[in-house]
Amino acid sequence: MPRTELEMQDVWHVAGMCGTGSNCLIAEDVFVPGHRVISVPRAIAGELPAVHGPTGPFRSPFAPLLALGLAGSQLGMGRAALKLVTEKAGTKPISYTYYETQAESVAVQLQIAEAAMRIDTAQLHLHRGAADIDEAAARGGNLDATTRARVRADSGHVIKNVLEAINTLLNVHGDGAFADANPLQRMWRDASTAGRQAVSTPAMGMEIYGKLLLGIEERITPFV
Image (cartoon, rainbow, N blue to C red; front, side):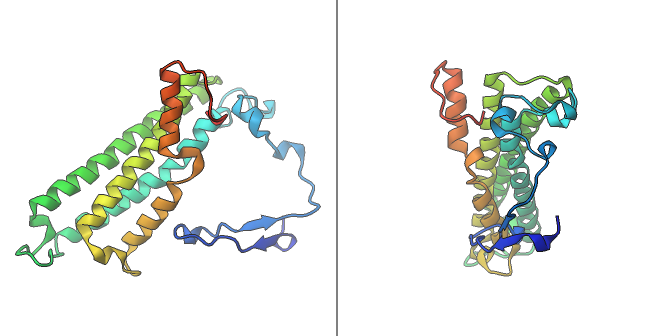
């Protein structure tokens, strides 16, 4: 619909993700056709309109897809942060030491390797969760409860490892990382903001998965 028919409320005042322009758009007295609407509770239960076909992307398990979809951008920010810090390490000195470049320092080498391994771990968990979702969509079926919970835990584990990797890279790069002109502080702010989204918080994902592994019947959310 034309933008002129919508009202925008300027509500997006957050530390990170400032470039998303995520303000509220309000539409009043606008007709929405039924085929444009999907019930969230029914989607969680695996009930989707037949018009989308028996297999394919629209048959992806809804709750795991929602959680895992938030993890991809986190991985991208982690990779970008690692690339920036490693490239700078070849020319950036370490203040108050005899090191002419960060790359010469064993301490820096260890931290860079640690950050890289955390990002690799995040990628592996992200790909495993995505493979589970894609396989279910391709056969037009759903995932069992334990696998859905594991994908939710995978999502949180991706975010946890990326945030820890970025924090390590900030330690390596130094306080210059927080200059307004330094893109590393933007990556840190954006990842820190996005990484707290309720549907994929690491602790909740682990609790959901742990309960199912232990056979505990209590459910804390329908988003599994």
